[in-house]
Image 1 (cartoon, rainbow, N blue to C red):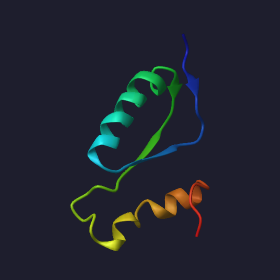
Image 2 (image 1 turned 60 degrees about the vertical axis):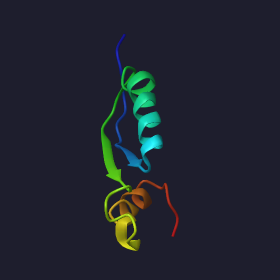
Image 3 (image 1 turned 180 degrees about the vertical axis):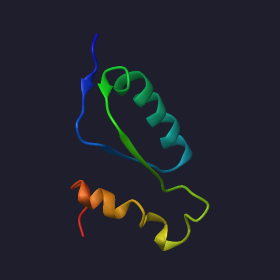
Length: 70
């Protein structure tokens, strides 16, 4: 079965550990076998998560992808 080609990249934002585990299972079993896509990965659960600027690297990308407002 041929994979479906996705032209635009998809923003992949990870948060806490449990979400990371569940999302990895979903991607491995339900997305990657069927779609040929590029992921732009951002990790919000970094060691600097207590600083308000932690989310700033992903904010411009999500805004450009029409995923966030503001």
